[in-house]
Image (cartoon, rainbow over all chains, first blue to last red):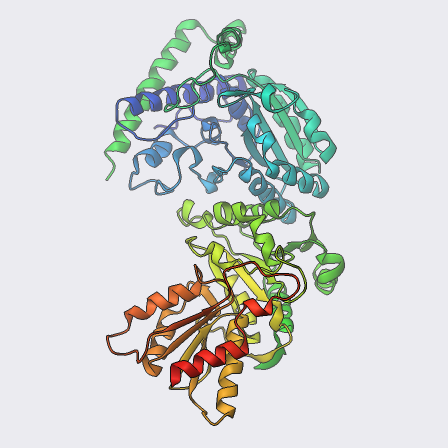
Length: 314
Length: 316
């Protein structure tokens, strides 16, 4: 029953689906960090707190047969593609039922039959693989798209430019989604590149580009719908999703951004994508505060129950 | 069975694979309009694709296409360029089958012609197979004959893990027989003998054959046995042990320096022979531990003369 909140119910209003999947991502990642600190799991978590709208909004716009390759901070892409919490936990706990046999680090776990392809720890390496998936889709004349997520640190990787170079020329059905949070671990973007905005990087390669409010799940969703149509139509797309990481760099390293980030964090807390979606639901009369509190409570319990179930799997 | 040059055997392997495998594509620079124009005309530019000079992305894309069930041959201009796409070969291609828990296969060939004796200088005349020797799930073949060139290519496309295909251009013109059936990547006894086993791959295997023929001509017919490895990883250990166990003497010839590669591996493998089987200590004849100058590569590589000299020493 662990799939109750996942995006498989296509009749559900899109706003609700976005809210539920972002909530599930946030709660699951918080639980992962908690379990690690309690010694229950040993995997490092790279939380996407504050950035959940990007993966969730994008995946909600995809169709059957589309594929994603998550970055190491895109847990939401697994959730958005309908992989249950239990299925993901199996990889953390090396359950005998783990589809990937817990071989890959859990932030790169894959479920190819669900459209979640294996990524790479080599920054940028997965972008070429996503372009290869897109090439196969084009070759087979499938009307599907291949999506890759990556942080703006990847702008320093040569593979990004090689991939855009070829994908633009070959008009591959490829969507590159940058989670542009302005930091490369402890280094602000301004130390290593000239501009925060990334659309000018992709345009010369023949990519259609759009700047997206990465903290607005509805903006991401609609942009991804447009991106999907555009990519299928023969032009690859680069979505520059502006955001700020509200959580830790990772459960091991903690906060590494140094003094000065507090002001930014305070400002971006007010744009928390989960809160914004909750506000939208309440403003439009489809949710009350107590409904959301109850849902959160239920989901927390389900996540804990999934952990116990998976830990008991023999 | 047909007799072909090594070069034509590779061409036939490409052609037959394209005909029999509709989901196979070739990607590389200057192939559709130049090097493989015949295949492009026959099978279309959708399957014979010219790329930019982007080797890292080319290999990465081959892996991505493989995730969707395609087969890909990545045509790299020459073997040294494997260093440019080392990450994609080691991290993306070699690991796909393992990381996906065998749910995804990677039947990808990375074709790496060895540009020996062509005046490329030290940035273009290396072999580089040994750079990859400790990467699990990465097949490496260095065919030494037309038959191996053809069948190891065909064999590689049937494997769930990728293959580095080190095509030795210095022996492109040698002719040989291509058998009707796939020997499945096993090593081949290309000369039979009972006094000494010479083991090699690629040009080194060809040198060993020439040395065996020379020794036979000098009145020692049937003295030298040659094991042509073909696949140097995984490697046909049984054949190596069977032959050396029979002859009791072993010489391993390798173009690359001996720090790594098949030569030191095979040398260690011989410890698996029962005690007393070897009549003398095995020898390695390898390339010098230096880069190869533009002006001449030959003085620093095994040659027919040096193979003959060591072979005679061992058999005395």
